[in-house]
Amino acid sequence: MHASTTITPTIQPVSIPVRELLPWAIFGSMLMLLAIYFVGIEEGAAAIFNNMYVHEFVHDGRHLLGFPCH
Image (cartoon, rainbow, N blue to C red; front, side, top):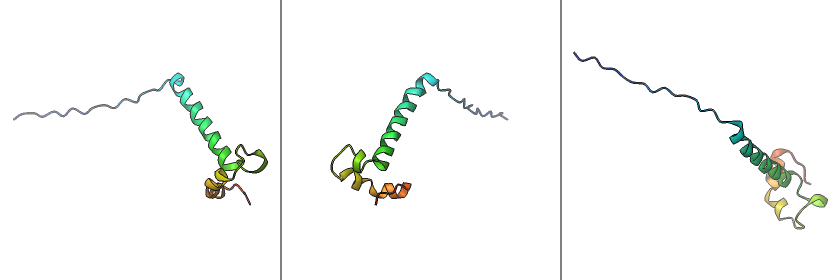
């Protein structure tokens, strides 16, 4: 009889250095702050754009996240 052996691969976790992760974390945070600005603040006196296009585009998202607008 032939003895069969099975080789099971071992999975090693990969460590990500903070130096490589930090720029992506800052970039993601900036995108999140920009999204929160457009959803939560872009209307009225603090508006960057003078029209209501951005407000109407994110209107349902504002109510879903709990921001009052009218």
